[in-house]
Image (tube, rainbow, N blue to C red; front, side, top):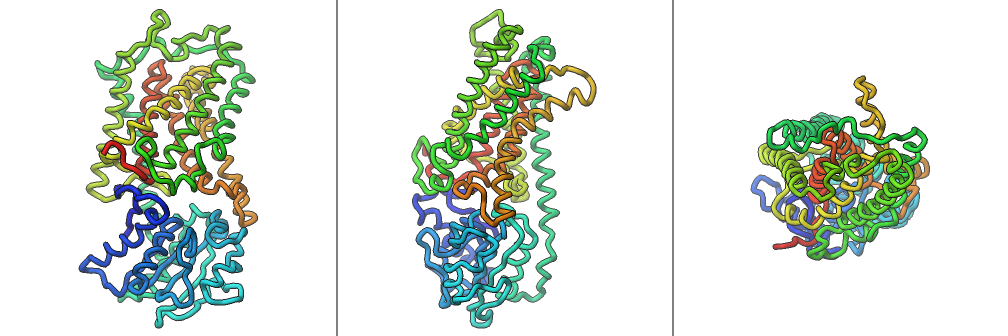
Length: 508
């Protein structure tokens, strides 16, 4: 049974502070204990990362009623929580990846491969010697079993590691034997994960295809500008590559330090009406900063190259017609309506699937689920900064990042999409890879002070290229930047909001 932490999924907002964040563990235990079919003497809690801290906090309240606790990539004795010890009245296991970037925070050692030498962990197990990985300390019969597992995985990789999951299942089965136990290696979840990946890909295809179909209708086809496929400015390959490299590098260079607050720090702050989600606020701040850089690049490129080669408001997709320099509000409103209808379709699909099958569209750390009313209220706050980002990004894609490539061959049609995937994903992807490379080779993350940022960055490796595909397709189809920027800003804002912890519900 998977339980939402406070502020996550569809649960209530986090009350504030560490105790509020860790209140999910006790609530999960209370809920399980209330179920008639649950054996009250055979309740186990397993949590990964912050979920492990929630589980550890539950033991401080209900420790004598909990049979087993499994901490995956997590710890006890962190952020003021009690450290598990030899006298703790329950079985517990610790499972750490040998490239877990949070090993220093959790067990106060720098090298994840040497977590068995952690003084804190040895105290928890009640020994002065380095722990033997896989050795049983204590006994299951007396409820004092302790075991350390080290698996081949990073912190985020522990989610999809058969070794990690098999170790957790095996320990719980040993602690609470069932009538017909299955081998821990008998895991079918990868098939389920693959099916959800296909669902997620299908959702992305739906956004493109549904938006395209709407543009063919009588009402929305006026959003398509005549000769939009041919509108372009001249660019040599060196100039395009120069600006493409800068546009690729800027988000990665600014990602770690040039945000409001580090992700880990802001995760524990109390929310306010204008900042109901800590991480979303920080990401929005980063997006606005990048908007400034992209705008400066556009101004530089236009003054040096674009203006000389015939660039104007129509060419850049900012106005439907260069003959009318006034902002076209009806055009914008119709584009906003189309984007809203597309997102309405996304909301409907995810809502129906979630209600009928109790699943969301997810693969590993990338996932989307239907929004509830409180999420829509938060979109009113965060939509504006993300719209600014995607509006300016769409102008960049329509100007200095646009390829002079209007051929009809398969290669000609694919090249703009390949380019946008690289430009939008390579920078953050390189940053995440470099961070993981340190963890894989030395047991310590390269950017040890920004481990949560690097893990969250995995999602941007997927979502930024996807937004680039949306931009490339709809810019080319309509000749303006409005449909693409509005679809991206609505969907990405919703994606971020529904996946982050809520610290404060606005407008309630």
